[in-house]
Length: 180
Image (cartoon, rainbow, N blue to C red):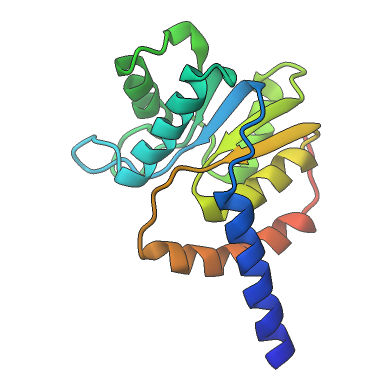
């Protein structure tokens, strides 16, 4: 039992370091994974932080086009549409934004990007630190050759729970079969 706990702690530490260390390679596409839109239509702080990280990479010309991916939240808003509105309000041309309204999960975002990006094989995925490792794995499983991750410097207490959950999600994705 102690060995399993030790492995869990080491793996979680690796996930944290992997996610916090921003690889930020130059790429044609930056994929921002969606998150909660508040009931009043404003972006959650977590989602705003992801978009601000994407804006930073875009403004430094490390990525050329942004893909915003998310689904219809229980609050009644399409995450990706709200994300696009935020980017446009921050001077990103609409022609530099691709909207994926059906990226309800990390897996679906990867699959949808495979179809949306037309033979692109390199992307920068942008999400919270604990989610970057699984997202990179997902995109690699979908056939993207050069995938790196970036995360905002935004942390909250719920990240501890998310890091715990991510341990199991990563191994679920590792053994998952992918079909286009």
